[in-house]
Length: 150
Length: 150
DNA sequence: AACCTAAATGATAATTATTTTCATTTAGAT
DNA sequence: ATCTAAATGAAAATAATTATCATTTAGGTT
Ligand SMILES: [Mn+2]
Ligand SMILES: [Mn+2]
Ligand SMILES: [Zn+2]
Ligand SMILES: [Zn+2]
Image (tube, rainbow over all chains, first blue to last red; front, side, top):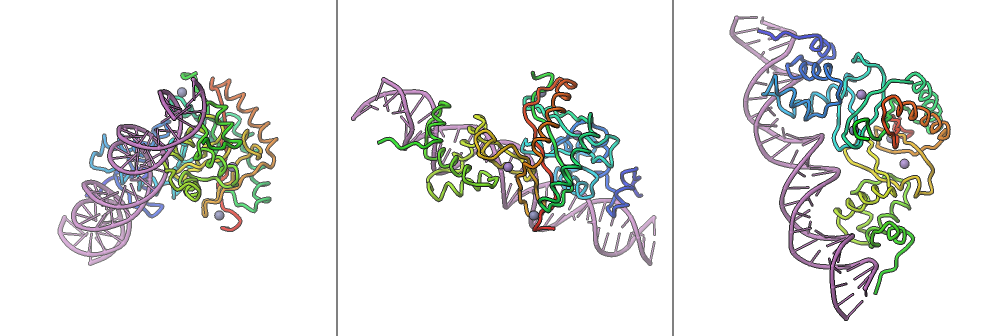
């Protein structure tokens, strides 16, 4: 008897990948959180429903999803990576991050994002020309101390 | 017989640290390169003049220099950190980076930097207020493909 | 519904970056 | 020259990620 596949499963099929419980679950986890989860954190959530799924599969799945553009890999300089659904596949809009260097909290902001994007487009275009560099994405973060840590 | 200490050595003393061959050499290496070296790369340059100095010392020294604000630790998402003299202690001005995701090349740019800084100050101030977040620094990079890799 | 096979997985080992430990050495003050 | 806290090196430990390989499974075919 074949497993049921949900919305994500069909999307995976559309990309030519198989729909598996681990893959669907990982996507559901990413969809239902505001946090920026590390592989280990995703793994521990996965384990609740599917304890047989291994950390290796989490890594492999995240890799695949990043390559498909479904998920974004973020590196905030902690020595480990974090993941979120990419702009296009999430309900959130384009945003950047505030990172608390005391407690590690990561805040999404999209205030002034239109001005930001406009500004970034402008310099991306200038830089692209000057350095003959094909810019495909940008990463912006502000480090400091959050509310609770000040 | 006491070792001679150079410019960097005196600066270290000023900070209350001892002037040691490894520390001076690491600072000289950082000063004389345009690259963004990893600890391993710094270690291999250190080894040419002082093969007895270990990788651990390189890590420890970099940590110390980052805490002093003399050196900046940069994370371009490669799973390892890279270092450069910080703005204040280098002859270079404030800049951001273009990162080639094919060959790994990192380009410093400081074009439009005044506009950038002005813009950043503006949003930093607004974000700081809105999220009650004390912003202390920003990190901006553009990913893409360089000249040679296109 | 049973069958087939490439794709996916899990367990394990291997790698890589970084940190810790601890016994020894050394910078720099006295 | 002497002294001692700070710095160091060698080695082991930790943490994140990747590779290997034998086994399982998704999903197309009969
Ligand atoms: Mn985010
Ligand atoms: Mn730089
Ligand atoms: Zn905080
Ligand atoms: Zn390149």
